[in-house]
Picture 1 (tube, rainbow, N blue to C red):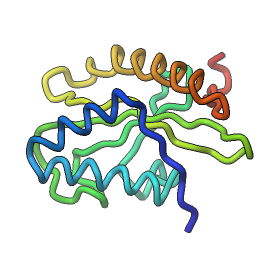
Picture 2: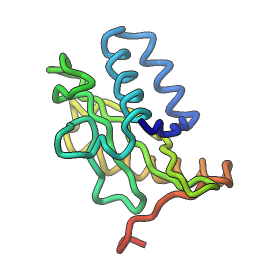
Picture 3: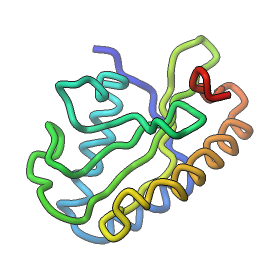
Picture 4: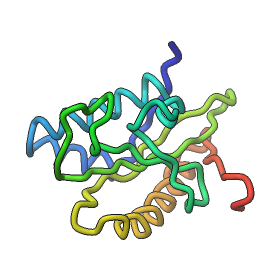
Length: 145
């Protein structure tokens, strides 16, 4: 099994630390999703899994980990909060793909209206992160340059 290298943006780390002070079960489910990303990488978007989905409106190759509905990684996540964790793919110096986890949040109140502002924030964070880590290049989706 190929382990994907996963980086955390500092502002995502702050969100995750705050989450850790709350409900242990919810924090554990988010950690299970992050471990699944590390273990499965792009395979999380496979039609046999529900943990992740591509964000089609993003300029970059962004995806969102999903706490709910229940997934293989979070089988008991049946109710709120409806957490999403946005991450993007970059290429590393040797051409391998690296995931950078950018933003986490609860879309329970806003539904899909949660996405536009958080996609914009995630793209800005990815640009900032790759300026600081010059060995990483964000993957721009084809036809969306």
